[in-house]
Length: 254
Image (cartoon, rainbow, N blue to C red; front, top):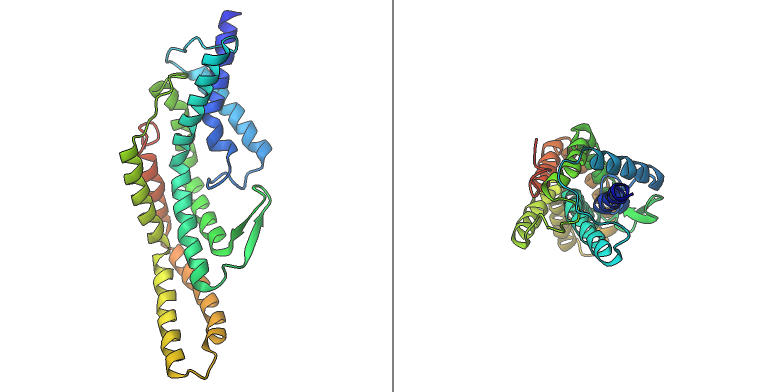
């Protein structure tokens, strides 16, 4: 029974490490996946990780409540750090797309996401879907899951060691923000040029209500520019994700 208890403890610790990535849907490529599917992937990934694990397993079992709970909390924090590899790129894309919503005038319009039970912006949904398509079409999801499994060899279960330093996190946060803005930069500049033209027209013709005339133009131009810029976005989105993966040695492998 001792070996069985150790394996059960390792299974629960591995599940606590992988759960933040798969079961917290906000700002991840898995946010449109139903919870039952994500739970099935979590269980399968945990079984595979424990089965192929070559590092020594610490003898933490549910019969040791306090050390086991502390180890579970440590694995949960480590899982949150690992999930930054997909959370940061998705958050950068979401931020830049929300700026487009504000510029184009469609910030009040939202789309309901039945998976997260929350509303999402129009441009944000388009950019997030583009990022999700690039993420899966390039096989980055396989690289991510393989890196999660290999993280057990780098950081053994129950050790509670973090993989990222505050300096590295702040540097990557800055680079992710800049790369996310680069995806939407052409559309932002185009809408800014339209705003300058509208401002000049309103100063030249103060008696005309230029805002309501320019609003449909900005909405139409925003989506046309966004559609054109997304054609050249896949290399930037790939660079965005690979830059985030490079924070962690198991995820940074090509």
